[in-house]
Amino acid sequence: MEIGASQIALMAVLNISQLPER
Picture 1 (tube, rainbow, N blue to C red):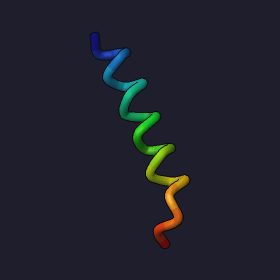
Picture 2: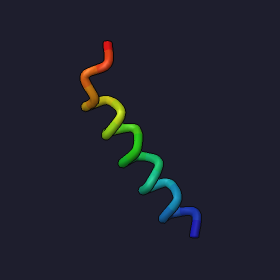
Picture 3: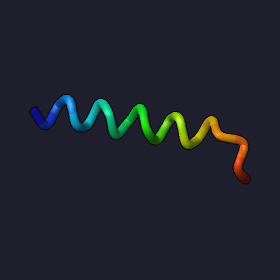
């Protein structure tokens, strides 16, 4: 289901954003 994939993608982006790498 594309909806599930988009949800996972959003979660991944949020996780990467939270990572202290900047």
